[in-house]
Length: 485
Ligand code: CS2
Image (cartoon, rainbow, N blue to C red; front, top):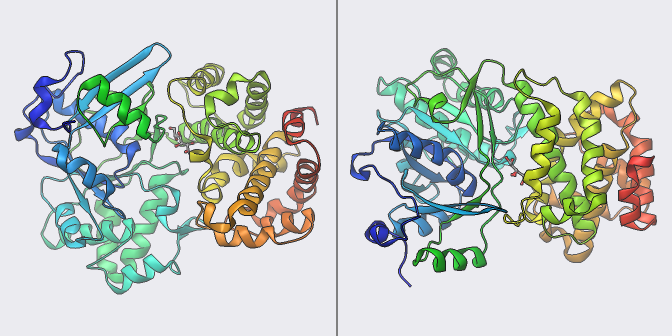
């Protein structure tokens, strides 16, 4: 079967939307670090809208910091891919043309730095996942092997922070202004954390460079939201039948799209507000609501669902008990939020539940369960800290941690640390070797990058009880009775 490419665009079925602008006229104004499915279903779609609106400055150069997979999928397709939006009502297919090329950083770090230093580039967006920031306790981890490497060889970096600093240094040397850096990962205060990391790193190389970035650069915080499950071979095959050609770079997603951006730029930008993003001066409440409600429930569903053999998110909330589990968790988390004006939390919850129930997405619980040590702090532990500090019992938040611990134990029992996709997999596997439930809880709470020391005395007794019960009883009964305790 033919591959999707510029040559076949004209032959696609009529109801498939495709770029109506002249792709030859695009300039590359955006470098995106970490070009996975999320970027292609989110930021790239906004830049596509800018191009459709006639602002040709916003083509995207994608960068893969590790593997060549996305480049190898997109290159034979002239950078084109299908955005497949699905819900119970049906499916819409649209071809996105905003991605002009993909660079594979390990193959040629210099090409990435040169791209970052182009005068046409005004924005750098990032989706590198939580662990890509190389932080420990909120600041750049100077003992991280990649950061050690990048400080020794700043002209051939491996990390996102190393590339940002190298690109900014080259711009400064060339008399160009900095680009605006937009972090699009699910971290609280993502822009601020990234700015601090960049300044710390730059300061070790050249303090004048660090001062220039601090004075001239901008790192707005952003909250991104769109559920983008990994596409499967079956998705690719079904799309091929639908559009008559094979697209190995397709992404599947829901109709919902949200991007809230702190209004602080140091460079030209597209008309974000007109293109469907929301600019604000107060971003923190948006981030917190999204991380604690959407992502918190996602992680809860991933571990609780994983333990009782549920493969997809919609199957969990199709159970009456599953819905109640999520609602009870939200009842706890919601008390720790100060919602921004314009966000009605009851309506937000109802809308989230409907999104989780989308039967057409088939979002795998195992995908969300990855990297638990990186995700749980902002999703589950932060609201738990607020509640325990106020003396509020929090059986649901505690049960999610217990479920995570048991889920880790089962993964390790099945296949050792190799089956645990988590940067702390080795340590988690060692914790499983402790004999008693109490010893495993203590060793878990000693992971100080996850659990603030002040929380440990309050959390230890309740987590021990929840985890012991979950280990002893019927998992399903224990999980689904958690709100009764
Ligand atoms: C999910 C997120 O895999 C995960 O950790 O919770 O990717 C989630 O789907 C997005 O943040 C939704 O915006």
